[in-house]
Length: 206
Image (cartoon, rainbow, N blue to C red; front, top):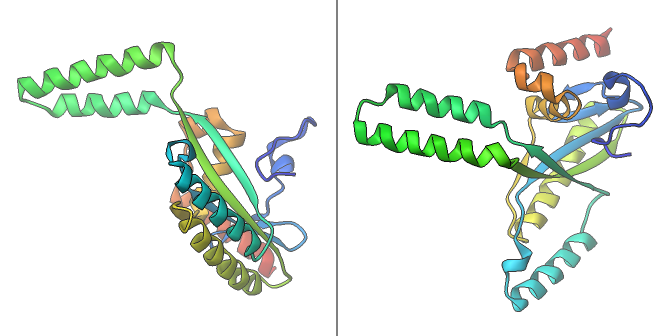
């Protein structure tokens, strides 16, 4: 089952997620399972020439043959929070004194409001999830670091940019997936991430 796949059973979000915590930029799952999540930029295959497409396919085949471990590809489609964006624009307007710039900001605001009135603005995010099982945390961290480096280099050869998610970004990924309305009102902060990590570490040491 995908780490970002909701169950049809009527259970709590905590039971569905089944995550023990995050530590060292890794997801900690039950039964000594660990996951690293890498965000990947897309490549517009259709805009490539035929020769470039063939080269990409060959490189992708080589990438798959050289994988150091299994992986999962997750595509996340989200509706953008345009309210916050418009609020930020309003802040710029309030602080602008030049009339010509105020008019430009007001016209742009009207354009955006008209755009989102009839259309949902969506964003797409692509993730690669790498698994590993180990009794010791340090062993898992070392091996997943090596695997993530190899996978990232392979994806870079495909023209993609990669970035491993941090502790707070991992928590936010699940928070926004399972509780989108609450996440909009109460995004996860660094303090919350630290509390969760400290709580997990205390349990492990107990």
